[in-house]
Amino acid sequence: MSSIAAKDAKNKTVKAVKNQVSCVLDAETVILHLGSGTYYGLNAVGSTIWDLIQEARTIAEIHDRLLQQYEADAGECDLLNVLDDLSKASLVEIRDARTEEVS
Figure 1 (cartoon, rainbow, N blue to C red):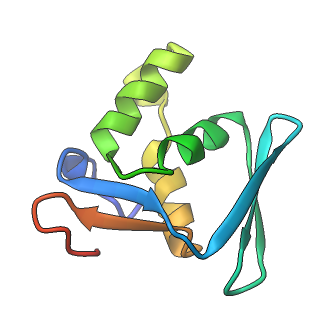
Figure 2 (tube, rainbow, N blue to C red; figure 1 turned 120 degrees about the vertical axis):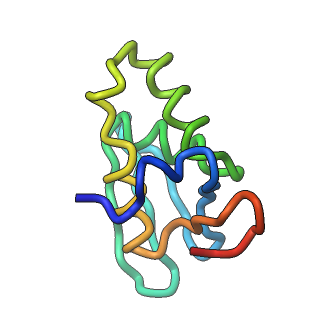
């Protein structure tokens, strides 16, 4: 279960941290966290999310883009869990869009 609440989708922005490098290999994204030296892999949908969060976007905006691109139902979108995993791995910053305070 994600620690990011769906109700926060319009009020939270997400952006990839600078302390990482990433590249695409065979339609998947590989990320190296420079601080920990740990590698992470993302599938095609995760790669799309990663591309979108190279600049700060609201969770709602990312969700809408995924639904458009993959023609999925809102219930099928696992965005909050992916963002939660990336946050736990210190690969993204999640901020309150109203105050810019890191959560």
